[in-house]
Length: 77
Image (spheres, rainbow, N blue to C red):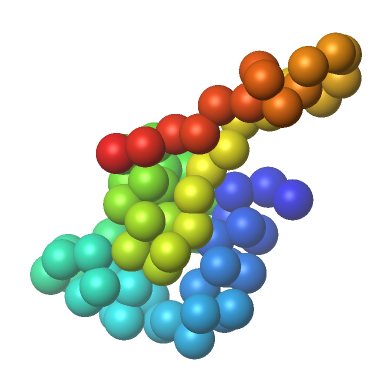
């Protein structure tokens, strides 16, 4: 799933419109969210802001190899 699809699903699963999401993270203009989703591009700080506001976390984990759990990284703001 790409970023655009992920953000769309995240907002839908949490019953958030672009305007509602903008308000939740303290942005005055919902166009910011709409543009970000339509481009499928945002910076990590914004993504962390969104996921944190909705109660999610971002995990980076290896695709293969030993000790995958030990090599997993949890991004934080």
